[in-house]
Image (cartoon, helix red, strand yellow):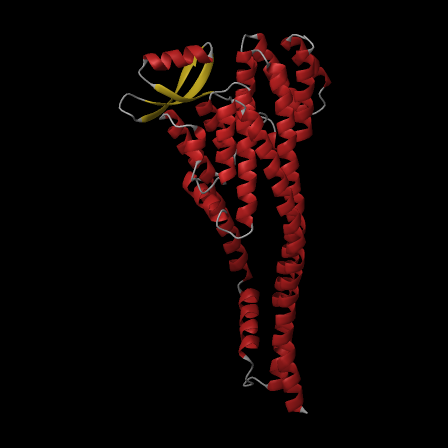
Length: 405
């Protein structure tokens, strides 16, 4: 027997959550329907193991997951029984965390659990998209083909993340250096220069406004550094907690879509993920509505997820997906147009893959141009800040030196 966590709607339209025990997913769905509930989501309850130092466990890298997916696909397509394939993978895999996951999956499959349900118990290793595509493959009898598609998709997503990370590394390093230089000037250099200025001009010397502001800032940071550090950490902690809430995450994602330059990258990445994931699910035989719900969670942006959920409601009400997305400001017109072509020709998955490839190239171009722009901008900001501090200090020193002379 397996425990399932469900979200459903009752006869009065109210959303309810709960847990139900059944031998498999189909029987769990049937039991809920007998209770007058319309099932929205149904997931296997994941058990949390106690004990052990989980913090020190090796993470499952993308390369490990891709290798596991491709090898399992090769063995299944060669006619190797699933249990034997998992046993072989368990004995050969080197990553200890993935080895433990495969071991748990092997026990579940031996007890009669489907591969998708066994994977669903390990959300840290297998995403919703991964699990649902495997489930669709099991229903259609094309698990080997689905695993090949999943391996390709995981590689694409990892490649995109790697490019974004590499493009943002240098600007972040420059930003940290800039902040560090500013803190060093304020805490160690400006206090000594303030003493020199007082010695030269006396306690009643009139200093330029910018110089006085710099000295006041330095004095505050020197005397109340613990408040600044404590306040900074407290602000980051509270902000992180708020962002983890649904409302906070939605506001953060909305804000990101309003930031110049950044909004272009986020939008292109979201559209590429949507089209590629939706195409993979449709190609695997998943229904349009279910594919939209899964894709919405995989896009990684709550604003896009809400928009995709609205499109799913439009499809439920009888609209074509191309009609539901037409006029949507979050999706470029080409997406709705290509969807319409795919719906007419019956090749929606193939058409959307081409759209995804196009936006992947767009993301690469934007990231390359962004990195070439950000580097000189950050250098100018860093130089300007140091120059401002120097001008606010050297000007009064030169003036007071002339007066003393």
